[in-house]
Every structure is written in C-alpha cells, then in structure tokens.
Amino acid sequence: MDVKLLPLVALLALATHAPTTNAKPISLVERCWCRSTLNTVPQRSIRELKFLHTPNCPFQVIAKLKNNREVCINPETKWLQRYLKNAINKVKKTRRRKDKMM
Image (tube, rainbow, N blue to C red; front, side, top):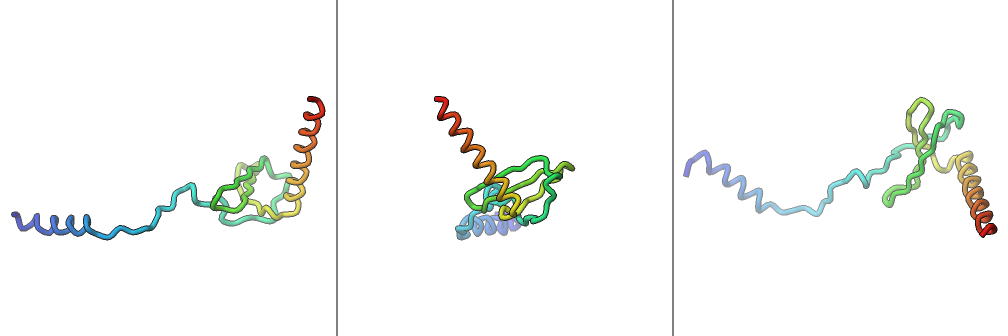
C-alpha cells in the first residue's frame, strides 16, 4: 500500500465510524420572519398588511410600506388591535347577511 494513501484511508475510517449527533438542522420554515417589531408606524404610510401564524413563532404582522420597505409591527399595538377587531366584526356581519339571504 502506498504510504500517502494510508493517512487518507485512516481518515475515512474515522469519519465513517464517528458518532452521529441528534442535532436537527434549522430549516428556513422554522425561522421567524419578525425578529423585532415596531410600535410606531404611521398608518398612512402602510400599503398592505400581512398576517403570519406559524407553529414555532408568535403571531406576526408584516406591513409593506409605500416605499416598498417591509417592517414588522407589534401585534399588541392599540390601532392594530382596533383594526383587527373591526375586520373581524365586518366579516361576521357579511356572513350574517349571507345566511339571512339563503
């Protein structure tokens, strides 16, 4: 056997018999989009809101601003809580109207 080949074979033998770990790779799905949130975002600068709820992350609100920047808004912000409450009430009213028509 060639002397230069011996260290390579030894290294491969060690690598194949090395103990495996139970660590799991962090996938992109498990990462939270919002790492920090803002409390003060002018409502008139918001173009659209996105709501994300993933199993490993808390409820996340992402605002796309008129300058195409995306920021995370604290879901506990008062104006956002009012907005969500009004949106839910609006959906409930339209459902009631549809049920009455049928």
